Amino acid sequence: MKKLCYAILVSILVTWAGTAFAATVVIVRPTSPSPRVTETITFLHGELLSVGLEDTLSARPVADTAVGVDPRAWLEQLAAERGAIAVIEVVGDDTVTAVDVWVLKSPGRFEVTRVAVDLDTASSSVRLAIRTLEALRASLVEANFAERYRVRQPEVRPVTAAPRVASVTPRSDRGRIGLEMGAAALMSVDGVGPVVLPVVRADWAARSWLVVQAAIAGLGTRATVTAADGRATVAHEYALLGGSYRFHSEQAWWPFISLGTGVLHTMVQSPSILGRSGNREGQWSLLADAGLGAGIRVYRSYYLTLSGHAQLAHPYVAIHLGDPIVATTGRPNFHLDLTVGAWL
Image (cartoon, rainbow, N blue to C red):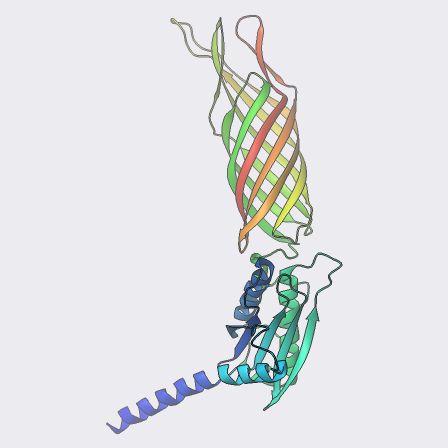
C-alpha cells in the first residue's frame, strides 16, 4: 500500500508539472474577420503547432464596448486569465496591416514587437506567419522561455529553409519534388478524337516560379475514324520533358505557361472484315508542346491544375481508308489536362 501511494503521488506530481509548463499563446482576432485575416490566423496556428506551442483564440473587443479600455491592460488581463506566455494580435479587420507580438518578459511586464506588412507589395500570409513566429521565438529566448519550455525546433533553422507549414501555403519550392496525376482529353483538328488519356507528371521546383516537368500519357481510350471504305481506331501515347513558368507563385492560386518537347507514338488499327485481316501501323514522331493554365492550392501541399495545350508532331500521321486521306493527327493536336498534385 505504501508503494502504491508513492506511485500515485509521483503520477500526480508529473501530471501537475506537465500542465504547469504547458506553453500557451493567445491569438487575438477581429470579431468578424475577413477571409484574408482568417487565412493568416490559420497559418499562425500551423506555425505554432509545428514548434510545439499551444494556442487559443480570442476576439478583440467591439469598438462600442471597448471605450475607455486600455488595450495593453486588456491584453495583460487576457494573458493572465489564459495562463499564456504571449499574445499575438492580428491588426486589421478587412485586411491584415500588421501583427503585434506581446511577450511576458517578467511578471506583470509585457513587451510588444510589431511585424509589419508592406502594403505596396503582394505579401504572403505564410511569410507573415513565419516572421511572426521568428519574432516570438526571439522574444522568448530573451525572456529565457525557450530553454524552459524546450520548443521542438532545431537550434539553427535558415530563413530560406522550407518550413513545415509551407506545405499548406506558397513558399520557396526550390529543390522540392512534386507528383501529379490526372487525365488529358486529346483531339486533332482533322477528324481524330477526342480521347481520354491518363497522365502522370513529375515536377522539380528549381525556383518558386520555375518548375521542371516530365510527363507521360497513354493507355487511354481510342478514337474511331470512319469512311465509306471502312473504319479504323487510333491510339495515342506521348512523353514530354519541359518546364513551366508560374506567375504569382506565392499566392493561393497562380497562372502558368509551359513549354516542352518529347515523342508521340500513334497507333492506327483497322479491324478484320469478311476474312480479310486488319492492318496495324504505328509511327513515332517528334513532339513540341505549348500550354497555358492555372493552379490552385487546396490543402497543405496538395494542389489542382487545369491547362490547355497545343501539340505539333513531326512527321504528323495521315490515316488512309482506301486511297484518300480521311483524317490526320498531330497537325496539330489539342488537349485539356486536369491533374491533382502534391509536393513531397
